[in-house]
Length: 79
Image (cartoon, rainbow, N blue to C red; front, side, top):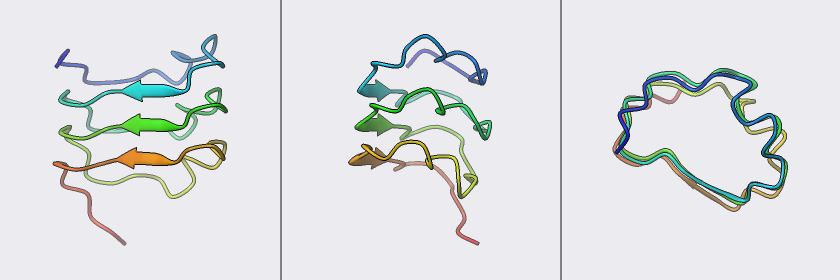
């Protein structure tokens, strides 16, 4: 846990080779629509145990290699 509350949309701009990202056990409430747009090689993303309540339906459109997405221990409502 790093107590991360927010991720700026340009944070990952220079990390286009990143394949795994673990953000488990933080305080993230919202994800900006383009936050992962530069992470085209991302295969694993753990957003478990945050404060997420909803996720934009197209937030992962650029992550065609994403094979593992963990969202457990959030309060996400499906619409």
